[in-house]
Image (tube, rainbow, N blue to C red; front, side):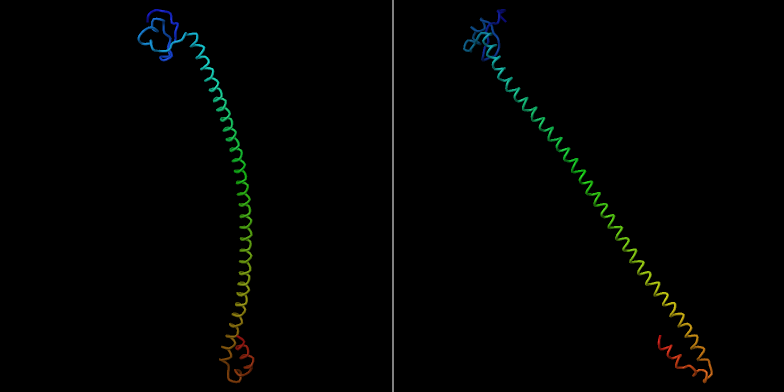
Length: 164
């Protein structure tokens, strides 16, 4: 502004000023130092900040690396758990399938036994029906016979009737 060379640094306004500005009303009560001193002071301040920033950056990189390791560990553990779950369910599936086959076989065997008993009962009933049909026919014929013929073998015929 005064076309003077900037030689001073105003600490309050944090800007470079010339000697004329330093004497002005605006900066008279302010602390000013030579630009070279300000440069050295701020270099030291920046170096201190730079050191802290680098430490924060290293901490962040380490934290990021730790988080990536956690994520990889989690993926690995999850993969193992998934594989175990699939194996366990496959084993359960096989077990249940075996149990199903055993149950179905038992049901089939039970059905066969019951059907065999029913067939035997039907055969026996057929035999009894046939015997009864024959006996009824004989009794009907006997009833039609004359008295002497009717009374012949009456004991045997009554015995067969009473067995039923």
